[in-house]
Image (cartoon, rainbow, N blue to C red; front, side, top):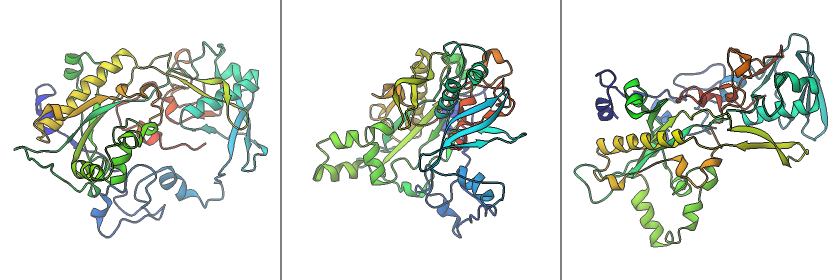
Length: 406
């Protein structure tokens, strides 16, 4: 990364990599009762990865926001319930309809002065608002801002991220016949990043509309199981697929595969803005329903041609990080590419779910105002990633996508 930063300067000045914020506690956290281990270095572990963290070291909605207030008199958490629709009286949401764990229909009366906050992880937030509009003409008029459903902005500009990167077996320079092996279990998910692909110089010279963050996947494939399940896969719906279908991976072939790949691979990734397209949208499915008979969410999404170009450009920069960093001196042995190359590329919506209820300062081009309040409602707010008009480079969307509470 340092060498790439020296080559891709900002106004002639080298760009330095930086330590990424650690999403783990670095000191005792009294509100949640979490304590830093006596050996602080054990925090930096490949086992502290993703959400939720079984060791309780990594932050989450429950750990950071809810557990400190779980015993307060004015806080209740109702598990295994589902909100079915919202009801309004004028510009106020006055009733919340839901099903309890047994499936019985229930109603919450919303008191005067109470805010109703929807944060169901973007897709389900938009679905809930659309389902609510189906039950009440006035709710429909307000949430769609006097537009027909087809012309309304609700559900439009659905976003994820442009992903991709590069990966190689580490050979080193001078090149070693046997792969170099490292214990990835003593590293965090990602601990270094660089913004050299987000400068004005880089954007203009490459014809890009927005840049990206490049970061290392230090603990990627840190365990034999994670190596197998992600072998040849691009996303959650293709895990184990390549491993299972590769008939060579039995007996000595499996031993050789583990010896060649386990602890020897290094990957570098990018996360970039997707071009917001009105045609990328969340709808209610015309035929598919949930167990309560409510229409399921229906996602319509394509990649803009610029998304494909951007991912190709940035994947090459990730390749350069590995090449310049002397991970491998043979470019043909460094695999690189963008998510658009995956067989399930158009369906890649398992994470980083954004857009569909964009905020802004003009009701003519936004669903929410700058405070994430629905324009024609007094007490209805949508605070998950659906408010984002663009997908952002990295930092903001990540915490948002971990907050699927209503």
